[in-house]
Image (cartoon, rainbow, N blue to C red; front, top):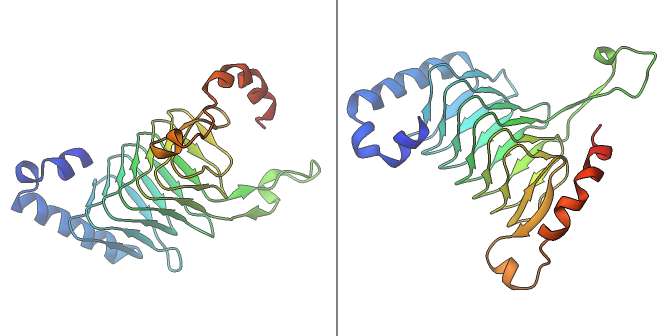
Length: 213
């Protein structure tokens, strides 16, 4: 698990384990356009697809846990933790995740959209678009979060479990819901008078349903 590799390095990152990781990473890099930073960790059952032009880069001290799927282009910064059963699909424009970001289990980020406007053409034959996804530094993303193509999540943001992020998230905002809405801000942003939407959040829940396609 990433937590053990990162937080208990003295106990769990011994010479044998480090050698096992280096061998595993070299095997992956021999098959895919994939690079690994110093002390990166990847579980042996993670599926990485990084054909030419769709590189995957795992930064220093970053970890990807069991059951994951990554299709480039995708770039993880330093000290990023991707928990179990996460899916990252880079589309054409890619997914970038900044340093020190934590991602909970069952996360999904898909940097493409299927066209479906025409009812006379089957969806699989309609155009696919891609704008890319950017997730900033020091972001905390909870369990079962989905992020839509074209979204940017600002530095220091928190995304509550089960959220579906369809629009950009401001730095240091805390968002939750389907679709995700701001419920408050972290740190100085709250003290500087940014309005918390906690009181109005429950009253908007019924309205959320009508916005979900």
